[in-house]
Image (cartoon, rainbow, N blue to C red; front, side, top):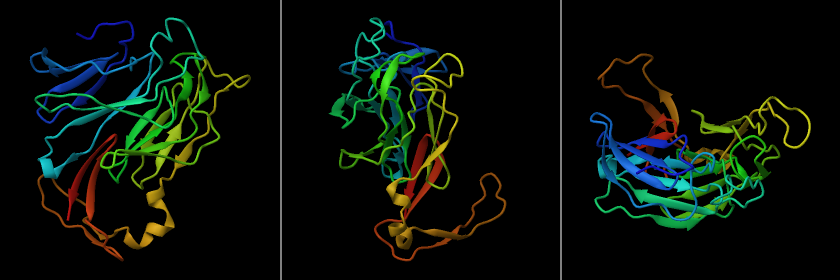
Length: 272
C-alpha cells in the first residue's frame, strides 16, 4: 500500500490510540506496531508526492484537552513537482499545496489549501500559540546534492483555527538540503545547516553555511510583554506522579491562560 518510486524516509506519527500513522509518496496507512499489521488505509493525498526525494514536510497539530487528546490531525505541505527527480529537473517549481486530514476520524478526507510560497525541503514546527511555522527549503527542484535552487527565504505562519497563512520577514541565509528547525524552550526557533553538496563546499552556488540563526516569532515582541505570563515559583525537584504547584503572574489577562507541555515537534495544551 506504500509503493511507488518516491517512498524513502517515511513520515511517522503516534496516534492517540497507540497505532502509527505512516505515509510515503502520496499513500497513508494506520499501522498497529504491536501486531505489525496495517489496520486501514487512508485516501491518497492529491497532487504531488511528498517524501524523499520529493521532500514535502508534515506535522501533527496539537492535541487538546477539549477533545480528550483524541483528535489527531495531520498536515502535509509542499514537496517537489511530480516527476521532478526522475527527470533530474532542478528547476521544476515546487508545490504550493497543503493537505490536512483527521487521522482519528472514521471517515477521513483531505482538505486542501495553497501556501503563499511554494516550498520543497521545508520544516514545519508547532508553535506555543497553536500555530504552525513553515520555514527553510527551496522553491524549485528536489532533495539531493545540488538538486534545488531559488531558496524559500520567508517563513510562513499557518493558523489552524482561521485557516489563514501569513508571510514573515525573510532571512538572508539559504537553508535547503539538510536544513533543520527546532523550537526552543524560550519560544524562539533555532535554524541550522544548509548543504546542497555531497561534501563541505565553500565556493560556488549555495556554499556550505555553518552559521546558526534564532528566529523570533511575533509573539515574542515587546508589545506582548504585558500579557505574557511570568513564572514566579516552582519546585526544584519533582517525582513521578507527584502533584506540584507552579506560581505565575500576568500583567493583563487576555482570554485563557495556556499551559504548554513541550516535546518538539509536538505541543500539548491545557487552559485555565
